Image (cartoon, rainbow, N blue to C red; front, side, top):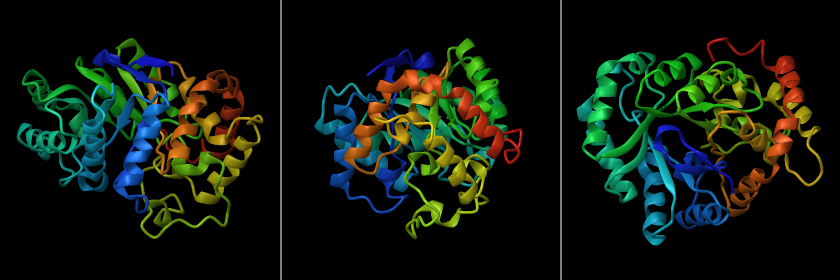
Length: 327
């Protein structure tokens, strides 16, 4: 699989990575053996980048990855985790003492001495412009607790603020065929500053899988079950910030663009990977088949580029008026 430079980390990562929120059982129950099988299938398919967070299953996702790493020495996998969502979301909680505590917990879960990449997990907006926050992260790098740090953001202005900081290695941001805002400023700024771009929510919470219908029912413990109207989370987070029915109509249009031999999900991933400045895309996978199919999207990057004019048209018809400019 194509490997791309991940910003200031200096590390090569696969253009298709693996998001592991679902392995924490926050999208429905997943047995550990099945979670480990997903990690193995992804790695066997050429994936070299796993993304997790300390709140995914309250550490369950990290611990599962830790078990995989221990069983596969010399794996060559880069693991990015996230921290900051285990406390009240006020800027003063983003302190060196808390960072130490959170990083130590993640190191234990993952079974490593030094964390490859730690991302602040969509903190309050003020955190992105606080000098003391970056000083604290720099301290942990100097002490060998983590190699690099980045941010995960909701808003494009937050991304731009973080990119302006000299030691920010990466920005994780929602980018998919139904959320084009980051293409305007964030990707060009990141490329100019050698900041890696990690594209999250690439299938718009499953809309771009091509498998949903108006009769789709989500499990009671699946976050999409209580956000069907698109209002529970920040705009852009779930179903691209619109109600499920609007998103479904757009997804049906997108599916109509996909040629034979390529799945809708693969085309959606390829579209993201084809955008200039994207380092890696992190779809989740609930089973080994999904993991292998997602990885195979790397074989269709030329299709992703070809789809862009039609994708822009779908966005204009269904999303542009619904998405607030700050997202």
